Length: 281
Image 1 (cartoon, helix red, strand yellow):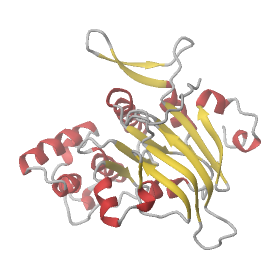
Image 2 (cartoon, rainbow, N blue to C red):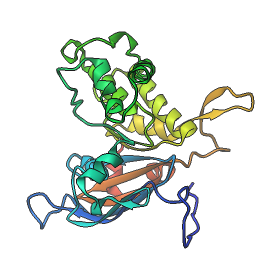
Image 3 (spheres, helix red, strand yellow):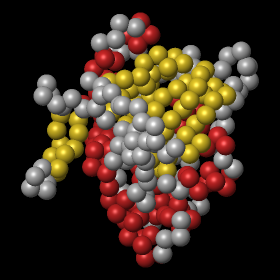
Image 4 (spheres, one colour):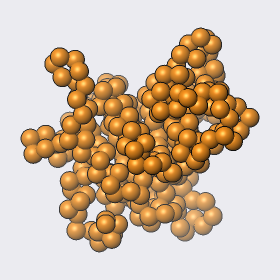
């Protein structure tokens, strides 16, 4: 169930979208066949937007555009009200310090230990060495890798490498996290642990996120479960019900470079669109 937002002449930072794409197109080889074709969508603070679509539909391209690794051929992209399409590379580098990214490839520095890979961004931001160590150990505990602190990437299994990449994205409490197929290569138990961590950041810390996946079970889990804090101050993990509908997680589906669905998951599952029906199990 969606909630309408009243227009405002001068929106406050809380009302302003964290991510906004306005009529964005990008071409790589053939201008007649854009990878993204006039894409528009908004994501507000504390929202999770799940990106779906066939291989090659432009999902990963959206993530790279969001952090300025790619520039659109047409349209505008805003982060927290700032147009990144008009920024210099130095300005974009500063903006990225507040963004965590889990790429489809783990892209670990092979010459650095697990701890050094996770600490890299904090050192760039000027954290003291003592604070860096505390934060790295805390983040590794979150993903179940505290025992791998001193290990090298060559010593890690595929799942451990993926969790190291996730820890690197989460370290330092970023305001925005971009997940490109984050559960790929993880066993179901660890996958659920990472999913719950993402939901906890979403529900309790108002972290905004984009999450790419092809797994419909993953989508159902993320879009139907949530964390809340009880009046006694304890945390409770719940599933939505007839009396409570989760509205901070929505689905954006792409096909042939265009948005074919943008809304609540309840509407997605019941959509008569044949492009969506053939994607469902």
